[in-house]
Image 1 (cartoon, rainbow, N blue to C red):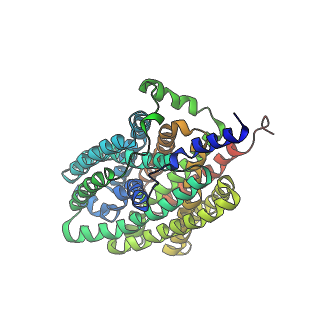
Image 2: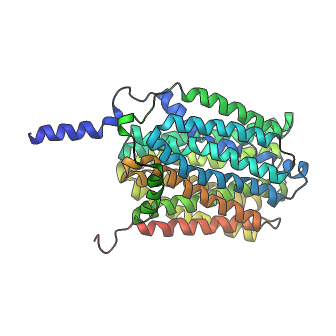
Length: 413
């Protein structure tokens, strides 16, 4: 066999994921919708949180735990969906998750106390996490390397419309029909998405699936956690998500209750951060093709550190009032565009044969960190912006420190 023939075979093998039918913009649109389930499941009801606290006769900290409860289900569920999708295909796993999401959303709508609501939020999250984790694996099925990072940035940019629109739409739903209507709306979204899922092709053909027993596949997580660079990618994304979910859980009460921003206007302030994320993701597409995803990721970590500390100072001192806090939080949120897609791409790059499991592990760490971020804001809640600012500052520090693991070790130099 000649070298040229061998080269051709290698190219054909690597490009297998791009074989016909090629991914269309419709397919990418459905993947964007799936990727957005984490945002739409939470952002839509943010303006209703103070009202929910009154209706369910509980305090702000307890309602903030509805986000933490969601993240418990969201992070743990991914660890099961990943290996299942590697073995049985992406659509079956995502479809099963969407059915569970619909059931959980209906349970939330029917809840009459905070603890029941938290329980159904966990069920809702166990279903939603399949869509988010496996949509990333589906992108990896279709694209590789820098191209995968670019496509993830594209999808995240499109998906960012959901948290931009979510609080605005949620505020209007609350004003017209009350907070329960938000969860009935999510039931409808889940059913529509389930229908859309089965209009696109399976991205993981049978011949590329992992046939090892499920128990062995689950044990592989421990093996993956011994990889130095993978831990660096996981830490970068995880600490960022801790800060982001502190932002999600804390800003409704800081903006609405502390700074007296009308609930109907909360979505406008929250949307500024989403616009920042969209712009950063658009810029990321250009930067990764020139400098590589590791370099851009490092810059994102430095910015997260600086803006996180700035937010902590503003929250503690009160300097600048509302806008003195909004600006650093906006900039911190924008670093998502430089950290999320690149940390996911880096984590997936060395394990294409276990893309589902690695994607699930990445998501579990990211959203699991969000449990601590949102939980600490609720635990330390004292009626001031300080708990939010402190968690965001600590997240920025952890994000950059994690990237030390991406630097070459002494053995590699």
